Length: 313
Image (cartoon, rainbow, N blue to C red):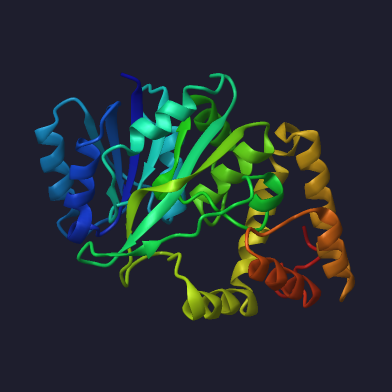
């Protein structure tokens, strides 16, 4: 069976960690190895990890994380995984993988030439703290694309599985200061000639609880939350950080991606309503109509950058 390196970032995740580890152990169709990087837990997280390692000798490594945030923790494991694998998977501490997650992902990844970066992701089943099904994350209809990745991440890290070529691509970017490790992987694979597949069938149960870093909620709560991120400059700051990181990888982007990136940067340097016009011309898109309209309004108001930084990058 193909070897899959599972990279798990933890920090005070004892409450739900055991269920997640059990779901990794149940995976079919893959010879998994687990690397867990703990970012300073003070609860029972390390005890749970060490107990799991003892139950699976030779298949689990636990190490201390860099303590620079969850994105840096995950990326550090790709830069120095400590073992070889044909495929890799991000793993969050509070979800539950469906038993066939890795087999479905690897089945598709194996159809892509090994020297081409490839990334698999899927919808998630949304569950509450007790595991009761609440619904599912959006079923994005437009294909994954760099023009989408510039403004939206549809590739949730807890669903991601990718090949060794993609790992080398992300690791080769170095210690970049990006806000989200999964968004960064989507940007690079989509922009650097790779292939991204979005599976409309949920393969992970995403647990909604008060400690989630970012939740894919729907309805009014989602609109209010995202409006706040736009209004206070948080979202614009994320774009700033991604663009700074992309500047170091521009030579590896494909021609179409470089052209899109140049148009997107030019849009941010325009003034007033002209920014909305330039956003349309750039070809950049959001997967939802409401999301795209929000981008147009935000661009016109200069909110696709931190306040005062709209022409800095």
